[in-house]
Amino acid sequence: MMRLVHHHGIEQVLRDLTDEIEADYRRWDLFEKAPRLASHSNDGVIELMPTSDGEVFSFKYVNGHPSNTAKGFQTVAAFGLLARVDTGYPLMLSEMTLLTALRTAATSAMVARHLAPKEARTMAMIGNGAQAEFQALAMKAVIGVREVRLYDIDPAATRKAAANLRGRGLTVVSCESAQTAIEGAQIITTCTADKAYATILTDNMVGAGIHINAIGGDCPGKTELHRDILGRAATFVEFEPQTRIEGEIQQMPADYPVTEFWRVLRGEAPGRTDARQITLFDSVGFAIEDFSALRYIHGKLHGSDFFHQLDMLADPDDPRDLFGMLQRAA
Ligand SMILES: NC(=O)c1ccc[n+]([C@@H]2O[C@H](COP(=O)([O-])OP(=O)(O)OC[C@H]3O[C@@H](n4cnc5c(N)ncnc54)[C@H](O)[C@@H]3O)[C@@H](O)[C@H]2O)c1
Image (tube, rainbow, N blue to C red; front, side):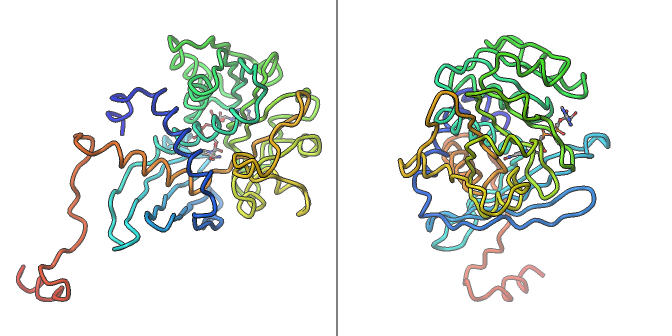
């Protein structure tokens, strides 16, 4: 994955993924959709995220363990599989830790290019962990953000992100509070990890016209925004039945109005309606984004050496003589 990304260039990959995900969102009704299967524990969650468009099937295995980094493990690690629907045979097994960071950033950029103020050039990035640089680069590559203002409760995370973003054509400003980070920003991305009803942003911090890209609230009992912000914002979600369980809107009554973002893309619902409106993308991560990302990577493999052939399927000469194949190997 790392060699493939460097071969094509990370900003190109982010642009391509943004377009791939958007193209799949536009054919939303063709996909099988269900809230992901989540196995919760005191430490975190392990999730399975399947979908299919009738020709190709995919699933991702992903965890979310906010206390992992203190133990030297990543908060989010993932792998996934692409398969043919006509035979049910797998096509590709892929790492998806990097791919999740790329597709999450591309999804943020896809939504921001339709909902953020058109002149948005400055973003605040609150939470400077594993996802942060990908988020900033996608906003640069896709909608032309020029300045990123970083804040994390851990200054070491901010130093890491600032160093990684140096020399990439972005003005990087390290800030000592979330309040300072949001100054002058038209886009605020929250991407923190804490298994809590956190208030990374309070209502008074969010001015008119801001686009909020809320990434880190993605599990029951794990949110980032004060509910009063939701009271003022037009809220856009991926797949409503999943986001009601996992997103910022878990804090709100069941009839709190939201718009599934694919409807904006298809012209079936309004996006941003005026310059002073606060738009909120309540991102939790949906299976179609992983499907698009896996299919994009699969499409890049032909003629490359970015993959290994895996001997994972028993392959008897006579498909009904599985036992005979086993016997002959004795
Ligand atoms: N929506 C999606 O599609 C999606 C995809 C991937 C990850 N996520 C979520 O995004 C979050 C970030 O993921 P990551 O891989 O970057 O995690 P990470 O652990 O690498 O980084 C999280 C950062 O948040 C910081 N932080 C925690 N509390 C904070 C606070 N109150 N204010 C400021 N900073 C704070 C931590 O110090 C850390 O540096 C996680 O909650 C993860 O579950 C969502």
